[in-house]
Amino acid sequence: MKTLKEAAVGSTVKVVKLHGEGAVKRRIMDMGITKGVEVFVRKVAPLGDPIEVTVRGYELSLRKADAQMIETV
Image (cartoon, rainbow, N blue to C red; front, top):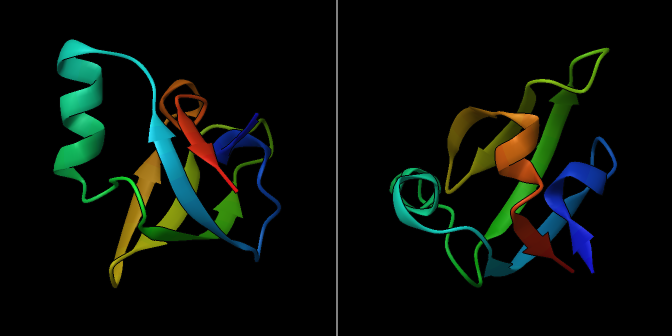
């Protein structure tokens, strides 16, 4: 299982599944990150937090813990 946290900078990955539950999963889905959407990884901070991505034309920052809950291919 690969997660968004492991995706290389400059790569585009496709979301396969969202893990987690409750408010955390809802927050991720509210950002537009849902199954089947493509996510472009723009930048990762030196210590890995936050991860900056582009989703559906919007630039977002994700926490490392949230990125780990997003399964990708």
